[in-house]
Image 1: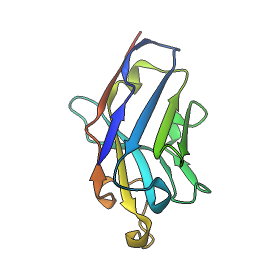
Image 2: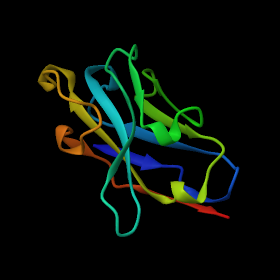
Image 3: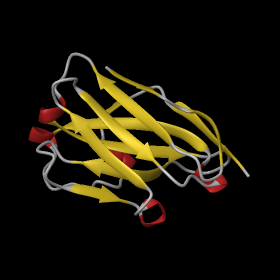
Length: 126
C-alpha cells in the first residue's frame, strides 16, 4: 500500500515536500514514480527513481525545481518541489512496480506501474 501526503496550498515561488510511504513493501525492491493530474488533463509523469536509487528521471518542466529522493530506512519516497508555479497545480500520485517485473519499461508511462497511492492535492496560487 502506498500513501501519499504533504500537499497543500502554496504561493507561486514557494516549496512543498511530498512523501510517499510504502507499507508492506520495500522501496529498494521497487521502481517508484510520481505522477500528477490537473483538472481536465491526463495524468502526466513527473519524476521516477529506480530501485537502487542510482537512476533518476524528471519531466522537462520540473527539472531544476523538483527533486525525487528516498529513505530506505523509512520506506518512503519524497518529492521536494521548489519554485512552484501555478501550472504545477494538480493531484500528485506516487506509484510503484516491482523491479523484478520491470523488464525495460519506460519510467514515464503510468500504465507501467502496478501500485498507486491515493493522491495529494497541490495548489499553487499566483
